[in-house]
Length: 197
Length: 197
DNA sequence: TGTACATCAGTGAACGCGCGTTCACTGATGTAC
DNA sequence: TGTACATCAGTGAACGCGCGTTCACTGATGTAC
Image 1 (cartoon, protein in one colour):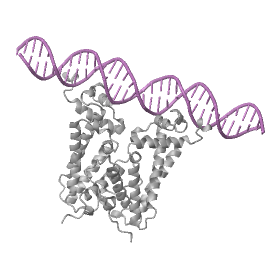
Image 2: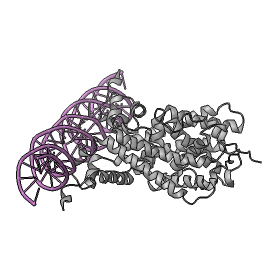
Image 3: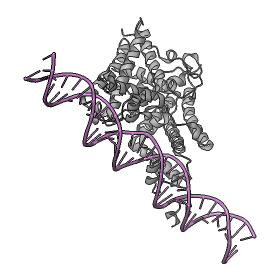
C-alpha cells in the first residue's frame, strides 16, 4: 500500500483530529505541531506541507470545532415543537457541547487569540462561516420572542450571555469546583419570554 | 542603599505585580518565571526563594486577582440604595473588572487550571478566601430577592451566569468581534426579580 | 558595644527539554507526448 | 502503451529559542553571647 509513504490528502484532516484529541486530553495549552504530527504517525516536519504555521492549524481546529458545535445544537433542536422548546433545545445543545468538549469550548471563546493576520483567507472564511452559523442557530431560536428591552438583539444578548455563562461556570468547571453546590437545571433559570404579538 | 543587593521581602509582591503586567500585555500565555524576574529587575533564579515553582506563582497571582475583583465590586456597590441598585452595581463592578483586566479575568476562570496539588497550603487558603469573598458579594446582592424557580441558589446561578457570560462575550471580546453589533447595556437585560415577601 | 556565626536572598552558569521552522533529500504520483 | 519529467508529500537532521529548575557561590542581615 502506498499509504506507507503518502497520506493522499488525508493528513490535513488527521492533523486537525489529532489536535482536537490533544486539547481534549490536556487543555488548549497541550497543543503543539510536533505532538499533532506524532499522533498522526508522521514526522514533525510533515505538517508544514498543509499548514503555513501553527496559527493556521489552530484556526482550522477552531473552524472544525464551531462546525461540531453548530451540529450539536441542530441535533438537539430537531423535534422541538414550540418556540420555547426550540430555544431550550438550542441551549441544551450549547451546554452539551461545552460539557463534552470542555477544552475546545474554552479554546473557541478565549479572548486572546493569535494574530488573525497570519491565517490564510480560505481558512478564515471557513472559520467565519462556521462561527456565524452557530450564532445564527441561537438568533433564530430567539426570533419568535418579543425583544428584551425593546432592543434588536436584546433577547439574543440575554440568552447568549446566560447560556454561555452557565456553560463556563457550571458545565465546564473542574470537578465540582463551584461555590453553588448543585446548580439548578438550565431550564429553570431561563426566563419566560413573551411571544411576539 | 542595601536594596541594591536585597529586596527586603518586597520581591515576592514585585513578582506578582510583574506577572499581572505581563498577562495584561500578552494574555495568560505570556507569563513566565523568567520574564517576571526580569521585569522585577532580578536574576531569573531569584524567584525560587519565594515560590516553589511557577504553579505557586500562578496561584498567588490568582489570589491577588480575586482580591482586586472583590474590591472592584465593593467599590461599585458603595452608595447603591435599593436592592435592585445594589445587585446592578455588583454586576457593573464584575463587568468593570473584566473590561479593565481582560487577561486576568480569563486567567481566573479558565477551567484547565494547573495541578492544585502543587500549591502550598497558605497560598491555597488565600486563594480560596478571596474567591469565596467574590462570590459572597454576588450572593449577598441576590439575597433580597425571591429565589428563582423556588430553588436555593437559583437567583445566584441565573445572575452569575448572565453577568459572567456577558463579561466573556461582550466585555472581554477582542476589538468588536461579536456577532451582535452593539450589545445592549447589561442593565437592560438583567431581569426584574421580585423581592422576598 | 564587639565579635562570631547562622541565615537569608540574591547571582550567574549550567542542565536538559520541547518547541516552531528550515533545509536538502527522496520516492511516489500524475501528466505530456 | 512507454517513457521522460514535473510535482507532490513525505523524511530526518539541524537551527536557535525560551523555558523551569538546580547548583555552588556570596554578601548582607540578624542574633547570641
